[in-house]
Image (tube, rainbow, N blue to C red; front, side, top):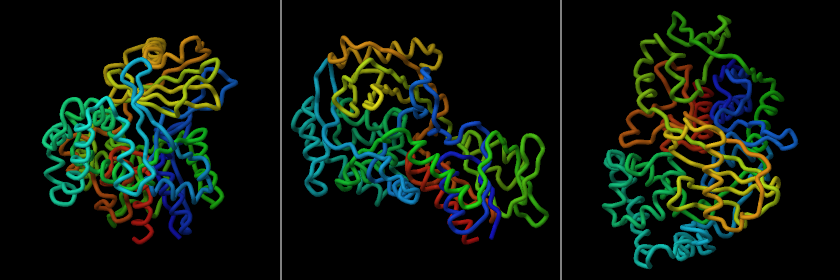
Length: 438
C-alpha cells in the first residue's frame, strides 16, 4: 500500500484520490482553499435562506462517460438530470428557434434539432452536416493540421457561412471551449462535434445538476475518500515538491514549512498554478513553460432570484447578446446568465454585471416582465479555463512525468478534450491508474 498525496481538491484531484483509495492506497488530499471543488465548488448566496449555488453554471453531456462513471461509483446518478425536450435559441424578444435532440438513431437524431433552427435557411441547416462529416474525417486523418487551424477558418473551409457561424457554431464554441472561434483550435471543436453533438443520441443529451455539482460529485467524493481512511485537508497550500537522492519525489512541502512524506504524488492543480510548485526542478522545466503557455480565459455569470418562476425552458441560448446562455433553476425561482470569454467585464461591479444580465433577460424573454428580482449576485472567474487556442496540443502534457512516482492531472493535461468536467475527471482517473501500476 502506497501513501499518495494528491495536491488539489478539484474534480481531477478528487477523482484521482477516490480511484487510488478504491485500489487500497492510503490517500491524503491537500487543498489550499477553504472550500473544496476547485472551479465546481459551491458558494453561499446573498440570502441565508437560499441553498448554496455552484461557482458558475455548468452543463454536462451524455458523452461524459467518466463523469457518469464517477457519479455511479458515488451513488449519485440521480443528482444529474437529463434535459429532454426543447433547448431554444432566441434571436430577439420572444423569437424562439427550438433545438432538440431527436429520437431517431444516430446520425438521424440531429435532424430534428437542425430542423428547428429556422433562423437559418434550409440549405444552411442542411450544410451544418458537412462540418460534422469533416470533423470525423479530420480527427482521424490530420489531427495536427486541425490543431494548427482556427475553428473559424476550419468552419469557413467546410462551407459554413457567417450566418451559420453566428447562429449556431459560435455559441457552441463559446459554451464548450470558452474562447471565440477565431482563436479556438479546430481540433478541439472537431472533437466536440465528433464526441458530443453528432455521435449518438444519448451522447448528445444535455444534463444539469438537480441542485449543485457539489452535492452530486464533490461532497460525496470527499465522504467516500474519508470512509476509505483517506484524508482531505483544507487550507493547506503546497509550496514545493521534495526530490530524493534516488530521483523520486519523496515529500511535499507546505507554505508553512511542514513536510508530508509520500510514496507518490498527483499534482492536480490548474495550469496557472503549476509553476510555483515545481519551481527549480530542472526535470520539470518544460512542464512549467508548457503549462504557462496555455494561459487562461475568464467567465462571468449572474445569479438572479425572482419572486416567481417564469422561464419555460431549463436553458436557452441567446443570439446577438453579450449573454450567451440562460439557465432555469425551478426549485428556487433562480435564473443563471452566463458570459464566456469575458475578459473585458471583470472591471464591472457586481451591480453593473447583474444589471447587464437582467437587461438582456428582459429583452429576450418578454414573459419575465412583471416579475421582481428579490436577490442577485455576480460570480467572476478571471481564471476559469485554459485557452484552447490553435496549437494547444503541443502544450498539453501527458499524465506521466520524468519522475516515475509523480503524475499530473487536470483538464489542461493531454486529455484531447476542451476544458470540461469530463476532461478533469478523465485526467484524475488516468493519473491514478498510472501510479497504481508504477
